[in-house]
Every structure is written in C-alpha cells, then in structure tokens.
Image (cartoon, rainbow, N blue to C red):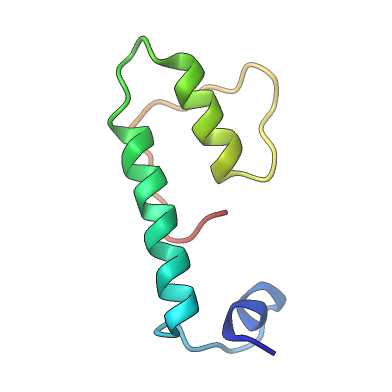
Length: 72
C-alpha cells in the first residue's frame, strides 16, 4: 500500500514520501492561485474551490486568505 493510500485510510504513513510531497506542492500551488485572485474573479475562485474540495454547496463563498495543510 502506498504512503498516500495509508494517509487516506488513517494508517500511519511517512509524510516525507516523494509522492505525498509532490501532491502537497500541487495543492499549495492551487491554494496560492486561489489566494491571489482579485475580488472580481468570482468564477475563477469557484472553479478553484471545486478543484480543492470534493464538494461545495451552491453559493459557497470563501474569502481569501484560505489556508490548509493537505487537500484534494
């Protein structure tokens, strides 16, 4: 079982695993992009939120600056 799968199943995992680190960097890039959006870029924010979260409700609004450790 990969370290990423262990993380998702709640088992102990190595947070320094190359796959996990690469995945986390991708998540941090999307989060950075979300946090740099202009107040008028509501469609872009919504699209990024849909990428970052499994599900968001209709009319969901999150004001940047958003922080998270892991995502997607």
